[in-house]
Length: 327
Image 1: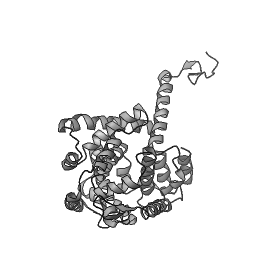
Image 2: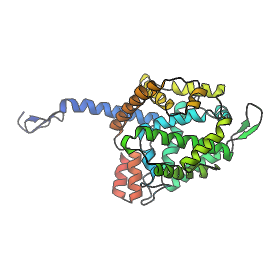
Image 3: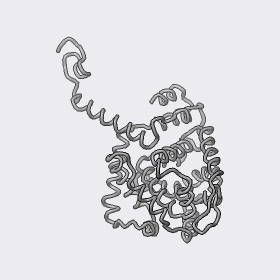
Image 4: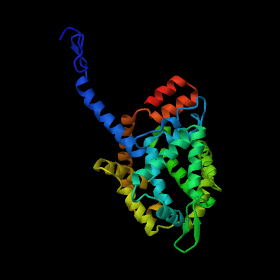
């Protein structure tokens, strides 16, 4: 063809565009993976209105924060998130509250969506969206009451219980980032900054005594360890977590991520949960596989539409913000 027509996007001005034979199927695979990842983690609607306005609003933290840096790493956050769920399950009261009042058994995908939305909204959302998300969780906690295995009353808005849930999550997110960030790992002072910054969320939720440094985190975990144990409810929850997935591909991805998450847990937590994976397997197989999966996810997703919208909002650039919202 020499008349300048374009056929299938490949022929222009009489010649075939280089590489076009493989670009279209590769792009189709990328788009399919992007849809699956967003559907699994966030749901069909990303709710970009939480992130793209008002112009100039930095949210709770802002682009220069260590929280934005840590929470932008896909593999670190996913592996850290799974590790946090495992670690949190070791608190008998927290696990009892989840078992009695959560729908994680019947709607695990919905539970994942709500958790991911809360983390992304409080991290990257506008100040109003973050505050609304926190207020919503506090309202729910206000209605969660029950009795533990010994018959003692518990309440989800107990400040000490909230401190455990928040601290386990923050510790695991930080550990996930440090393991998977490579040369971007945080220095000691930066890790302290992360804990101090993210403590704001726990405090706004009503937690008391939230650690704001590495030393404080070590003291807290040493102090709470005696109260932790693997109840039958915890073992059931971890088993369900490691088998999660609606499709074979999802189940395989979750198994890769949860195997790597096991490697983030303290040895006493792994032993308590009855998970036995040798050091060599954790370091030489589980972590490389999770890094590979994380790289595939970054390739599929590119710049997150949520992060793009939040960055443009914080910078006060309406044109870029509108473009991000359409993404």
